[in-house]
Amino acid sequence: MVILYKWVPVPVTPLMVIRYFENPKEEIHHDWVPIDDISRHLQLAVISSEDQNFLSHSGFDIKAIEKAIERNKSGKRVRGASSISQQTAKNVFLWPNRTWLRKGMEVYFTFLIEVFWSKERIMGVYLNSIEMGKGIYGAEAAAQAWFNKPAAKLTMYESAAIAAIVPNPRQYRANPASNYIQTRINWIVRQMRNYGPFTLKNIDVK
Image (cartoon, rainbow, N blue to C red; front, side, top):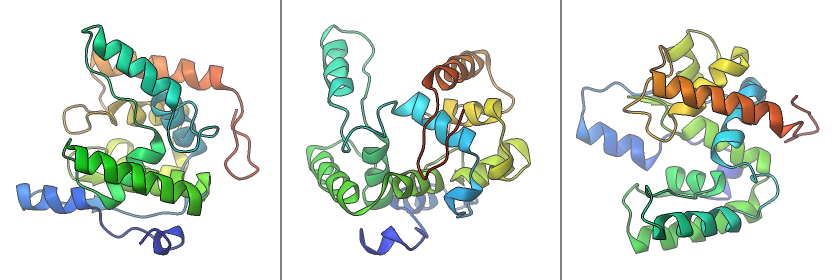
């Protein structure tokens, strides 16, 4: 499946199946589009909010993991450190439960996609597969649902709004944004501006 999905769109994820059986009446919106049809602002927004070392690590952000461990030991709010590659592996191949077996398989699939896929492919699959609202999966469905426009046309602020709800997309709304989400949007936009240019395929985003 890892080799197949290097080229073939992912038609359905385990989470979509789980959500369907949890609530068969919840309509699923999932429209796969090439990464070239996803705003580069959204690509930068998820990197800035979820995994700022995405382009430099090999699937696991060791520094982020170490910081999360220290933070959790200190008794502060539990915080994860899953990279975009890890989230992609989990979303596409695995189930969402927090068990040692699933975490072990997540490491295995993360290693495989980092070996066989390019960073551009990982980003493309990630943005086409993650949950971005109730019944909303992927950037195209999210752009249409939250802003009534294609993913290619998302602005910096709209992209930041979608990225802001990724950690808990069934609880938060990208539009209209609550005060908490608006605070996250402002933070993500600052991170995007501070990040500077990045490239997935010989294209700089500024």
